[in-house]
Amino acid sequence: MAEATDWQIFRGSRVPHDGIDRLPAPPPWRTFTGGPPLPTPPGDSGNPHVAVSYRPGEDAVRQVNAALYLRRPLLVTGAPGTGKSSLAYAVAHELNLGKVLHWPITSRVTLRDGLYEYDPLTRLYAAERARGRGAVAADRRRGTADAGDDIGGYLRLGPLGTALLPYERPRVLLVDEIDKSDIDLPNDLLTVFEKGWYEIVELARRADATARVMTADSTTDRVEIRDGTVTCRAFPLVVMTSNGEREFPPAFLRRCVTVNLKQPATVAELTAIVKEHLGPVVGDADGELPAGTREIIDRFFERRSGGLLANDQLLNAIYMCHHAALSEHPETVRELADQVMPFLSGEAAGPDDD
Image (cartoon, rainbow, N blue to C red; front, side, top):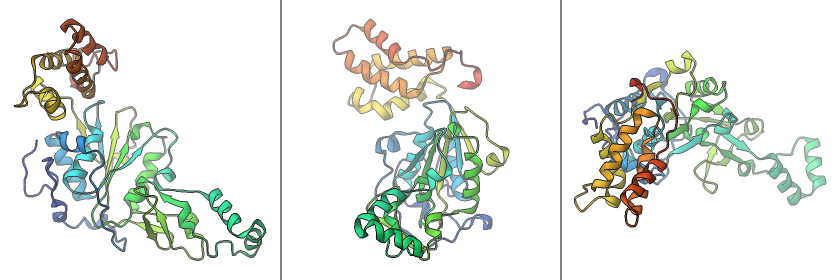
């Protein structure tokens, strides 16, 4: 874990603090002026166990701080199970930045999905029930169909759209597995990240372009959008994870802060991870791990040279074997451990894969 220094806002301490208020003004080219300012929604990161058990390395701590200072997205790469997503929850927890806004990416996801969703059919049906089909049709012919209509009840901001609201403190947005996206999404995201604002087209077209809309955090609490446009104030900490399944355009990489998370290099590092996650479950009163658990850790470390394994497989194996050992023979428990830790790839790992 990195030692805390004066310039570091995020320290990897796992202890909540208000150091984010020490963050200096952004570079002139990354200044955004959205308003009026909104307070950070109450609540923790949304994944308390991960937030307090994740152990960020020195590189991760340094690059998180770089992203905070420069108001740039953080692209986190690494093998499965190295804690790419966990990093977002650790930052939100330590810096008191509220619940992480999670946006899982697939090949079908578009930029619009992350910004907002609009439900025109439900809005039309509601208007017809309230005023009659004929009255709604007449309003459309006269161009007054929006009169007295609460369009905000049919608009909900997505994770990205919510993160770009004018919060006083940056929100944490987790864009999970961006390497699975359509080829155009990284460049589309880059445009929004550079501008720091976006337009809600359905709202901007109205004579009254002000509405109170739902957010990704809540369907009951609403925020006011003025002039059909959302502009950020404190640029969010955007954590984009990638398993390395594709390359990104140079223009995209140039505008990101990047960090590659490595697999634990020693048995001692693996043991420390197991203690953080499962020490209270499998350890003794002093937190020391039993011989059977240490044997599984050694076995996992040895097997990593034969194929890809993820750290969460080790945690699953230890948890299962801890309970199985109460009634099974040791050789059966060792067999169970191997079954719970199958290789994710049959190819032998190279020296750079550790």
